[in-house]
Image (cartoon, rainbow, N blue to C red; front, side, top):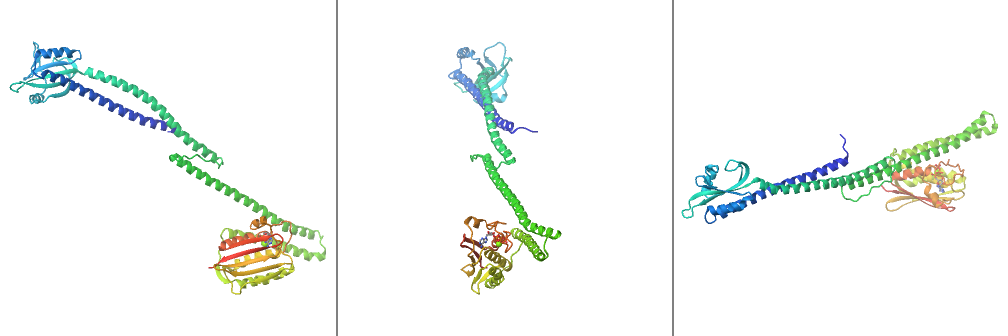
Length: 468
Ligand SMILES: Nc1ncnc2c1ncn2[C@@H]1O[C@H](COP(=O)(O)OP(=O)(O)OP(=O)(O)O)[C@@H](O)[C@H]1O
Ligand SMILES: [Mg+2]
């Protein structure tokens, strides 16, 4: 069964208010009734006592009866045998009280207010009545008792007023409670609806929604939780967009990188097909195609490598080994290439310099950086300096090449980034992946790499590998 929260709230609040009112009303009514009966009892005893006060005289009783008649109060006197002696009648009447009650009276105990539905003459009338014993003054002997009665209707009449007043109060409270519960329910529901409409907005993709939080109650806690949920949704959404852009960029870059060698190969193949390449150029063409194919293979391999490193698929076999020997070997290998462009490679490193790294990956990092230095330097000097301080081995690769501007330096770690796209220096293929891989490897090692560069002056890469 569906019931709007608004009505649930209203009903609950209303029920509470009503229950309280009913309980209070009934208790008050009960209290009023008790008070009314108690005061009647006190009054009736007062009359009885004033009649017995000194002596019991018929004249006094008659006068009293006359005065009290219009209040509905009746006085009866019975002798010690329970026979009515006032009012005097021809017929014999008795009070009809039990023997136990008569004994109590004999012992001097008055009988407190009781109710009966007939008077002593047998007439149907609801009366409240008290009994007070009296004794012979000289002997102190029980000589009879006085019964003073009042009709219940007079007591109830005074209660009726109270009841009427209470009823109007009840009706007013009912209206008040309805209005209060309506307002209360409306307020609560409006707070829920606020969260609901915010949720709808988020569902539609608006992650800028924030709810006001007055830190008052659980609704505000909910609002706070909602806000932090939206915050993290927003962050994930941004991350998804960022990843998606990266993926798109990567696809575009990869396709772009592959197009150049494929176009070259395709052109050469078409030339061969249509016999448009002179015989003496054929060997050169084949070599060109081979170069381009190798470049493609390298591109694919480097991409795979990069992805592997990035997704933590490679495990480093770190060990401490002699860095000097590795550097010397690399310098020897790259010297030919360096000399081709008039560059001088200088190694300045203590022969006992140790480094804690993965042997192959360390070589890969150094080769990449030196290759770049050779690539972007003509007729200059490239120095490789190794040393160690307290906690780490440091290797600096400094060239006197073209250098980079500050903005260029910021971007060199990005995949496929090349500072000058138009530059067609194919000494090492130039796919823009080298430094991206270097950075991944360095991070994986827990090492660090920094770059200082000035356009036209040269570039220095500094690597620090922490000791074991
Ligand atoms: N020593 C350097 N001097 C000047 N520019 C450099 C130097 N090293 C890197 N760069 C700049 O950073 C860019 C990125 O270098 P990276 O090694 O990642 O790519 P690449 O050398 O162009 O291609 P790859 O290394 O994949 O063959 C280079 O294209 C170049 O613009
Ligand atoms: Mg490079």
